[in-house]
Image (cartoon, helix red, strand yellow):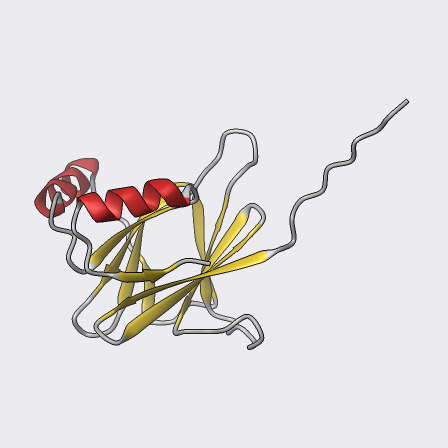
Length: 143
């Protein structure tokens, strides 16, 4: 009899999103994704303040927009997944639109010209393709 044991990967992948001298560090760890304001290397301690997203293995995922504001603040607009702020700071903000219509109009307005916006996904190939197609100017460094 042969048994196959599966284990969740504890490997952390760091992704960096930068625009206009502001950087967001994304840390993917299993079914959780963390977003930190600033640039942090793997060997550095991470701050207590972050936005955390969790999803299930079976049918879950992460989908959002990252918006770099001219004042240095960054907004995360969730469109899929369970997002929450941990030890909130003023410079990394979860933004919810007041209505679906407001979000749809905003998304239509940036279609093809993301500029300071970056699409986020747990499927990195999809994230890269969508940002390329929409001419995002956010610089992304993948592992």
